[in-house]
Image: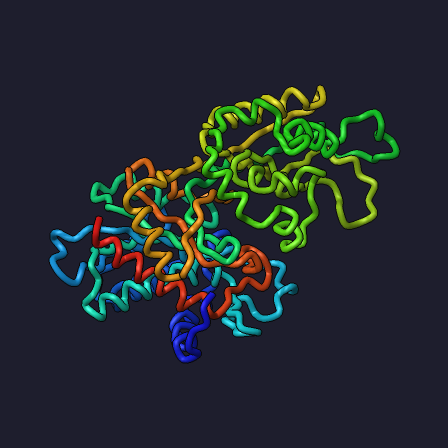
Length: 446
């Protein structure tokens, strides 16, 4: 990243700090008002840029929608959408943070705070670029702002809003992703996700393990036995969970070969490979394959020395869906695998808590090609076309509306999004603003 004048960085940090210091944790009901305060910050930023914006209640969740008109001839100018989310992940474990997660802190050339990487800092870059161009009377496109406060809980308010909104747009831009090998990347596909709660019961009540162990069913044993039937072997899930996977074309595979090896990716995250082939297959496994991950297990007594034979246990399980897969088909296969492996006498209840389909982008669309040129001018390198292993609910909704979307971002691997000490390099802020300005200017040709 190119160095930038310190006073420019300082000004951007000062503008961003109040936004970062709102604890807008959508997963915790106690912070519902904070989520609304963060939405109000976005609304006011759009208004300060000369646009109109409102924070509306959509299905019980705050949604900020607004428009900043083109500086000249808005009736004939292209319309582009800016999406971002103003909610953040919970900061726990707080004791692992070097500073308060909701006090923006500059340390060793980085800006640290919960949400600075995902997604407040990156949304700010876009909003700042819009404000600067509008202030200079040089904004060549109409900018439609659509931002939600429940992305971190995979909410669907923005998806349902877009389905009901007849206005559409000529293109959309989302800053919510990472740099690859020191260069920008445009995401051409995201994985979907289905989130389950699996509950197993094996009797009327907990039992003394000395009196009944070895003869009575243990709910944790039953749960782990059932879940074990759904897990990957040698990096591949059971075939019923792989139904519908879209093939990776040669051009994509060639782009992946330019990225750092999976061993470096894993090492940078402090992670250990799950099997001998994991490092070599890192990008294929995290971008083009589905996964089953057990995110949490509850049952029995994990802390005290209590020899209980638990009668119930539950787990939260997330399935990432590869592009091309159908959530209903994979969900049915997941349930069948669980039930087939469940020990006789155990009762299983499966709750599907949320579901988001995979999304994809046509890399040949004019908006994408103009964007590639714009980013090359702004950053000095042409973006790679890659996939993302994460899930963005809006990605499929935009594709269904026929809106070509640039999904990109400026996060280095060390940004610690969703983890303690989340941060971004200070130089990221002016670089992101510059790239956003160049992109909005280039889209005048749409």
